[in-house]
Structures are given as structure tokens and as C-alpha cells.
Amino acid sequence: MLTALLVGGTRVRLWSLTGRERLERQLRALEGVRLVSEASALPSTGRVLLIRADHVFEQRALKGLLNLDGLLLHAGTPVAAHLDAGVAARGLRALEHGATEDLPAFEVDALQTFEKTLRKCGPPLVTRVTADTRRDIEDRLYGAAYKGITDFVTKWWWPRPAKAGVRWCARLGVSPNMVTSTGLVLMLATCWLFYQGHYAAGLLLGWLMTYLDTVDGKLARVTAQASPVGHVLDHGMDILHPPFWYWLWGLSLVHFQPVADIDKPDLYVAIFAAYVGGRLIEALFNLLGDTSIFSWRPFDAYFRLYTARRNPCLVLLTAAWALGSPALGLWLVAAWTVLSTAIMLLRLLYGVWVRVVDGRLTSWLAEPDASRLHPRAYEEFSATRQAYG
Image 1 (cartoon, rainbow, N blue to C red):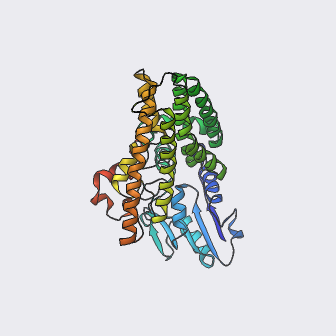
Image 2: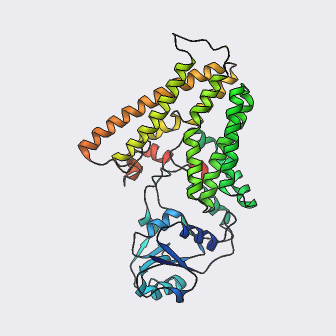
């Protein structure tokens, strides 16, 4: 068990949280960490984690700190420490007086890691919080919460609108699970509207649901409120509902005309089979190494922008409706879903071959010289730049 102690603090709030409130939530999310409130409660044996509460730490910075021994320095000043309990007093003096106390030390750059979940890389955010830097740090926290590799709607359209939603929710105390639950209601309402043929209203609620799907995850990260229940509800809903939207859209098409003997039932089978197949391919690819299928090589990151997930397919349905041909939307979704899964299958087979020949697969973003080898892709996918503005 690792014992953690927060040192000092600040009254400046980031996303409506003080430094201590944020760190307490973050530490509770780390397995095997026990938080104490006084230095006298630190153990005499074992390991201790000391953190200055007037600094903000991205969650992956705290996770990285657990794997390194010594003082964490920011701009040469100790801001956290992972030490043996026997030298905890020296660690406390180092944090309080800004001296290294001849303890082993490392800079924030030593924490640089590839974040598989968010498909991004680079040094995690660690910085001091002041009233003058509050807004800038909030922007950086929001940007750090954003995936680097995702679909083009989430990556290019939603960052700034979703930030406004996150700010509003944080200010009013709206929890991520409340946002997710609202999205669930909208998702079900969209199902009914598509089935009834109310395409405009269904698309409106569907787009609102996708917007909230971006808001809830970012809200959970910037306010340190991620929970297992929220994770299951959010991702479970994301995985299950898309093909049902397309199916119900198709059921509403009364005057559908088959093409080359391909009728609606054939399209339903193609959509569901390709969609489920794509998800299975993703799961199988994860077994090949320390990367997902979309973060393996730059090609896969670019492909993820447009692959047949809900948001790109919703664009297809919206375009078809705008052209006055809802049936075209069903055809486009079916064709693009099948083609996307075929490309993913080819990538899986190639990945298996590389795994057999060269060993476990790793992401190009995790390569030390990724920025030099793939400058344009690195600029685009190492983080979502629009989310920081």
C-alpha cells in the first residue's frame, strides 16, 4: 500500500475544483494508494507519495510518478516525490523549501508516455496554479482530456462547443453520469423518431446526443469524476446503438427500391455483420501488442477519422436527408460500413504477419523519434490542437 500526503494548496479553482479537491479525487482513482491528511500519519516503512497541492497534475503524470523513484521536478523545483518512508521527512522539506535534499530527481519529461486510451503522447501536464494562469491551465486540462486519434467530427467540430458545455456543467455541478444519462434518453428518442420517419427531428436529437457524448467524457476527466459505472454506461451505449439507428432508419423507408436484387433485409444483414465484425477485429488486434488498430501506424490514425463509426455515418444520413433521399443514406451507411470493415480486416491480417515476424506491435506515437519520422501525422494526432484553444 502506498501512502499519499498532499502538501500546501491554493484557493484558485480549476473547473470548479481546488487543487486539493482535484488531487483527492485523482488519488482515490489509483489502486493501492491510501491518502492521509497529516505528516504524522505517514508510515515508518513502505513507500510514500508526496504532492504539492498548489500544482495541477494530469492523471497520467500521477500514474507515471508511481513507476519512478525520487523527486519530480518542474522547472527545477520539486513538486512531488515517490520515496521510501524512511526519507519522507527529507522529501517534505524538499517540497516545502524547493531544495532537492540530495535525493534522486527527474524532470517531467521523464514521465513522457504514450496514452493508449486517449491515443496521444507527450509529457503530461504538471504546472503551478495561480490566478493569472487559471484560464490557460483549464484550457490545457481540457486539451489533455481529448483523444488524439478519433473521428473527424469529434476531432475537428466538437472541441470548442464541447468545452462550453463542460464549463457550464462544471459550474452548475452537473455530473458526467447525468450528462451520459441525458444522452441515453436522446439516443432512445432518436431511435423512435427514425423508426417513425421523422428524419429532421431524429437527426437533431442524434447530433445533440453525439455532442453530449463528447461532453461527458471530457467533463469526467477535467473534474476527476471518472467512474466505472459511467465508463460502462458511456462506452456500452456507444458500442450498441449505432446499427440499430441505421436499421430503424431503414424500417421507415416505405417506398424503398431494391438495386441489383439487394433489398433492405440484405442491407440490414450487411450493416450488422460488418459492424460487429469491425468491433471484433478491434478486440483481436489489441491482442497483438501495446496498441489499438487505429494507433498502430499513421495510416490507421488517418483512417480512424472517417471509418464507419456513428459520427461519420450520421454525416452520411444527414447528407442524404438534405438531398431529399433518405434511402440513399441507408445505402451509403451499408457500403461504407462493409468497406471500412474490409480495410480493418486487411490491417488485422497484416498485423498478425508483423507480429509473427517482428514481435509485439507498438504504436508509432510511442516511438522516441515519432515527431521526426512522421512530422505531419505527429502534428495532427499526438494531441487534438483545437481542444487547447
